[in-house]
Length: 596
Image (tube, rainbow, N blue to C red):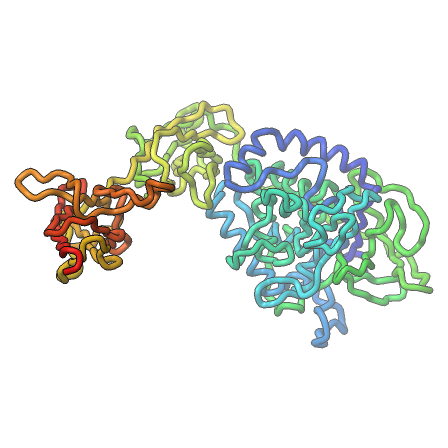
């Protein structure tokens, strides 16, 4: 009966024919629109369709139990390793790993709600790729205790990817290996480190993008699955997303099986106590397998040369395209013979989620006014459209994509220039809050019905420049008399002023300082105290400057004037400070004769 609930899957050259067909479909699905959406989200371009995200690495996992039976007798936790068994134990997810999946799904849901990414899908992929980080063998920050590495991608049964990371992630200086709980290849994670445009993400907010960290890896996987404007509640989009991870129909069916299994219920278990795959031979012996190697030691079952039976050393026949790989009942233990297991009971296909009916024909703009905001702020009103069918009735659950031109500085949450939103029960789709950025100007926001031919809706939007900071008063911060001797400078930072507006400090206010003559019509003086041009060079650096512009108050509304020099003239001179709003301050500068 063990074979009824356990199946070992092997991927190699046997699935080459399937991969060729699947990748052809992926190439079509990842047309320019997909790349445009990925870039629009402020993320990374979709990896080439002929290189799965895990490099086509072999994987090893059991199918989930069909009937969720009670754990077999004698199965218990000894405290020395992960829990072994089936049934409810299989529904246990390590606490930190579970938290990472939920956090990633929540983050993607905020930045791309139209994707409808369920955390159980991340759990299904995590199960197949690494056995939930080898049963939750992670530290408190979510980083694996030992590296989880796939086979060397040397072209023998897998993709051929020569080293792109200098061994930084996988410790391999000749070829890449899939790394971490979600098995990213280094070139996909960081684009080989050449320009930093890979899919790597910082899921735990520590400022690093580490594929060995389950929070980072789960968030990156979530962005990848949602690329191209996918709606994962639509079966075709869901299938394409999974096949993009590993172009194998065996892989697709296995991930979908675990996805449906986790949707029926899960529970949290302590880190390090998650279930690892269990293989049973004909003698009833058991052994647990992590599905990937740790610490660089290669002993992975089912990941050998293409078409080989584990432990036999003989080349077997390729799997039939579109069917699961053979299930072997022999344990590849030195000296062990084993007995074939009974033919496993096929796992029923995962039910397809309901899809939105093809009936949306019209998108209508809601609200007539153009959108506006001030640079650095947020738009008070968000673009909104209503979806209708041919009879004029509202269409609920339809995906609508809002897109910004790349040239504008405005962004949706997550620094995205494109978001997909589902219409509500009244057919309304409202874009998330739009941040104006610092760039002023006008641009157009477009709303389109995803997968439908309804005409797009355009919204005019304008970002206005920030108004110049105002000041209605300038005052010195000290009443100390300002004196100097002819030919000698005033004390360093002798003049400090504060600008205020309606009694509050006025930061960022531009102030002009001018040495002026006395009288009812003061003019720039040609003698007495002066400044030096800080930008001047050569013989001009000591040339007297009696008007300075570009002076600005700091965050507290304060300004310290540059050093003030004097020539040979003695007497009382005037320094006038002004703002564009008409605030004026006149400061007396007394210069005593030389030698006095």
